[in-house]
Length: 96
Image 1 (cartoon, rainbow, N blue to C red):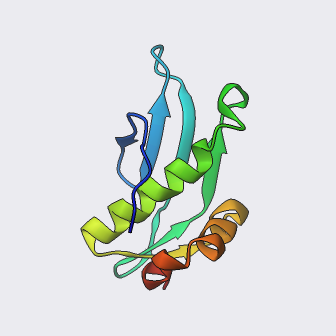
Image 2 (cartoon, rainbow, N blue to C red):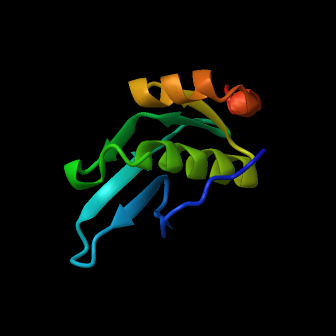
């Protein structure tokens, strides 16, 4: 599975974020635990200043790599995450 170049995302518990220098969140994906080894990808946010640059896709790519690294599976409920997994069948093995 090819990885896309990712900005300096920070893994923060069950979230991956990109922060501005002032600490504000510029982009994030959240994935709280919803079962044994399963997370719910329930929220994707990209600040208006970064939209149209593929940032949401980079977040989901980073999320997929993190879930694979930690042996967890995903139940996407956020509409963007659902669509991303449909477009990236190479990550279907992560779906719960």
